[in-house]
Image (cartoon, rainbow, N blue to C red; front, top):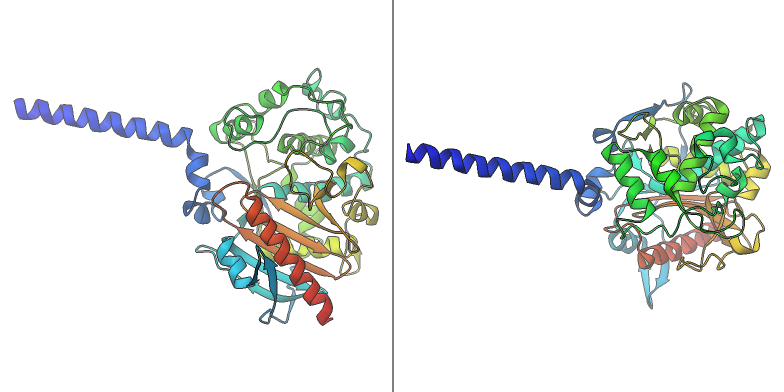
Length: 401
């Protein structure tokens, strides 16, 4: 009996330990899933972890014309001349594609779980996709830049979003919330992530934000602004984001593969307009080409020309390159849910945490997709190195003609 008691006691202790471990893992799932090396798997397998809504591939897929070649390009960073191989190694590239003048000229997949068919979690690069959808909805008359967010989402009446317009949300000037700090678990973005993954109420998080500034007066990068924008779009069109993206983007550009949004665990399940889109590198490159060509794909107008132009810079002083403040890199400005780069070419890029880039230079007619698995959400050094490399690559391709 003594041995049996000890055995039962040991089993109880082991069971308690497993239970405690499971609770810890549930509460810290975001930290585990986004840290290296686990994140290389996570960022290509979000559909195994969260509920999803599919964006079906085009019924008439149109593959890129391919003239793939080795890119002879180097860049200067931190006092040293480096190669694209250095970039991939130093910044944990998982997928990389380059399109020049509508032709796929380079494609590689250094990531452990990466491939042409892998669908990559794009994080805040999703915001740029949402922007394109909003531009289409504006052209169709479903929305206006002057629409109040609460006119479409009355549940936000009386919150910090009361008074913010669609235009304010697009330019991250709603006046709601504070600094988006992924290292602070009590920051709005931390509470938002826990609501998304833990089954909590996203609406409660949105309603809890303080008013930090009058709408339209100050830039404050906020994923929650784009969450509101995505929900406004769904309410105005009466269509879930995945279905609207399928009809207005994926079908017109001839996407080869299904994409998807992951959804909140809590009900009503909701796509994240600011961060839950997953797609292949090639299909993401199609969106870049679409924007580089002023909203036209294969002779068909998909995104309004004025919308594509506005995404290169809104002409607002507080959104110009170097004027964003808040510790953000001085090489970026902001407009229309895109990061602007200024200069003669007025290039721009979609960005996502952990190193996701959709680089668009309309003058050089160059699009670069870079997916990555950085060990931290934000990394100024890796960001600066990537910008240096992609700037040099674009210049080289423009020079080659």
